[in-house]
Image 1 (cartoon, helix red, strand yellow):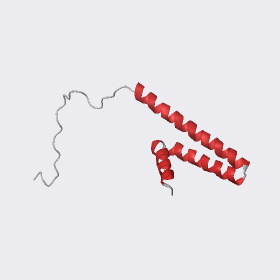
Image 2: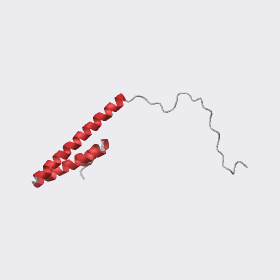
Image 3: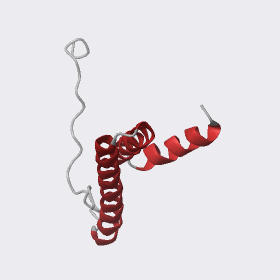
Image 4: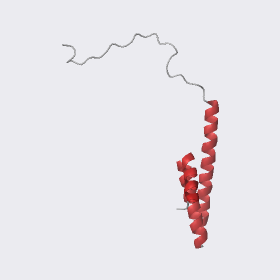
Length: 95
C-alpha cells in the first residue's frame, strides 16, 4: 500500500473510527460505481460518504460543546472526617 494512503487511513480512523469507516465505505462505493459505470452504486456511495461527513462534523461539534459546558466534578470530598477502616485479617493470622 502506498504510504500516502496509509497515512490518510490512520488520520481518518484515529479521530472517530465509526464515522471514518462509514466515510471510507461510501467513498469506496462511489469509486467502484463511478469507474464501473454503475449509477446506482455511485449515488449510494455518495450518500453514504455524505452521511459519514455529517456524523464526523456532529461528533466533533458535540465534543467541543461538552468540554466547554461540563462543570468540574469532585469525586472525593475535600476533607475526610471518617475513621479509617479496620484491617482485615484471615483466619490463619488470628490464631
